[in-house]
Amino acid sequence: MRTSVGRAPADEHDLVTVPTRTGLEAVDLLRLGEGLGPVLYDATGETLGFLVPRGTTERWDLPGSACVPAGDPGPAGADRPPVTGTGWLIAPQGAGADTTCPDRLREALRRAARTLDVLDRCRH
Image (cartoon, rainbow, N blue to C red; front, top):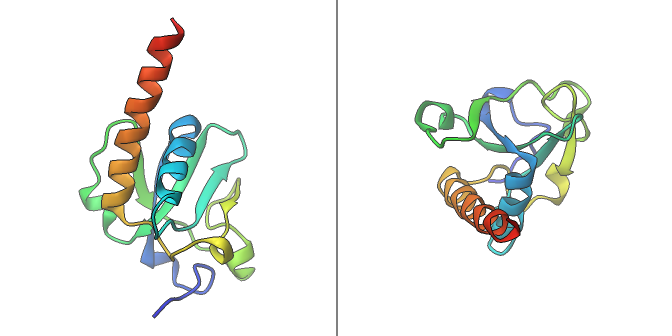
C-alpha cells in the first residue's frame, strides 16, 4: 500500500545526503528505472537528500555520503519538506515511490562517482 511522504510518520524515513553534483547524476541514473522516491535539495545548493526507508542509517556505509533519520514533515503535509532549509527537487507527488531503495541508491551513487571521476580526469 502506497502512502504519501507527507502523511507518513517521520520515523518511517531516513535521509541519505550527498554532494549535489553526485546526487544529480544519481537521480538521472535512477530515473532510468522505477522506484525513485522524493529528493530534497538544500538551500545552499551543496547537497541533495534521498528519502530512504527507516533503518537504512544503521547499515549505510558509502563514503562521501551520510545517512540520518529524516525530520518531521509537520502539519503542512507533503508540500513541506521534512528537513528545515530544503526544498523538493522531486516532490512526493511526482515521485515514483515513497522512498528510494537503499541498494539501488548505493549502486547509482557508485556509478555516478565513477562517471564524474572519468569526466574530471578528461578535463585535465
